Length: 211
Ligand code: B12
Image (tube, rainbow, N blue to C red; front, side, top):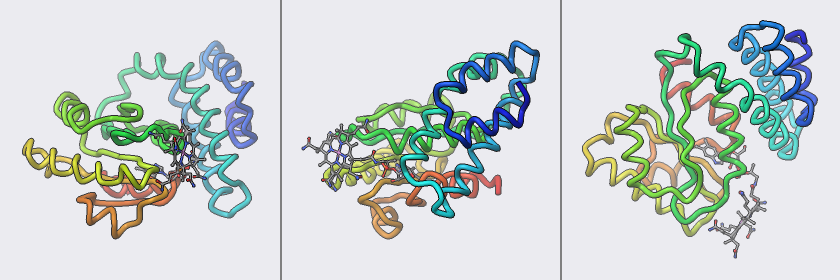
């Protein structure tokens, strides 16, 4: 299994074949980080095709699923490696009261393939769980998703709970989801907003001082 083929499988959204291909590459003795890089290359291309409107949301969702399948195989191998130190830690969640996670999961795949250490808390997550995780992991970035107008206010709840806990200045808060825009995000206490996952990764890299 060569690296170009792995990249191709991601671009072609081969969700059913990717796990076997990754297994094959690892069985051949290929380095898990090189495998990850070839998958990331595919994901970068998917991002580019999306930005150029050759791919749409359906393709982005499928690419997310494809990466998820690949990560299921890669994760334990990567976790066992000592190269995974000094990574920027990110907490990702859909806010309390909101059970939409498709967009969050796309962002999750993109962040993992960009080499971040990710703590995905899932959906319907309250401020207590987020603060606990920040304290436990020392994460410096919190990324929150919300799709419901009804739940956007929960971003403010998280922002204020971080202030109360005295750790607001230790983290950057970025938010996304259809009912939001930069102005509203800032009003709710967030530091940043991005309107899609591809752009979200770019913003997060900037917040982390990587690019
Ligand atoms: C799928 C869906 C559901 C599924 C969710 C399944 C799941 N596991 O996620 C189910 C059926 C469970 C559902 C339930 C409900 N839903 Co619904 N749902 C949708 C639907 C059709 C698609 C959402 C979606 O996944 N889009 C695809 C993803 C990829 O897009 P996305 O989430 O916007 O994410 C992108 C960006 O926003 C961004 N992004 C997202 N999060 C983040 C975070 C960060 C940090 C960053 C940087 C970027 C980022 O990146 C993503 C990719 O580029 C939308 C309508 C629509 N067309 O959007 C309604 C919609 C969101 N739902 C709606 C409603 C009202 C509901 C219900 C209340 C319905 C009901 N009466 O029960 C319940 C709520 C349940 C709850 N408590 O959450 C409304 C919300 C209206 C509003 N403004 O409040 C919508 C808009 C439909 C409508 N037009 O009325 N829903």
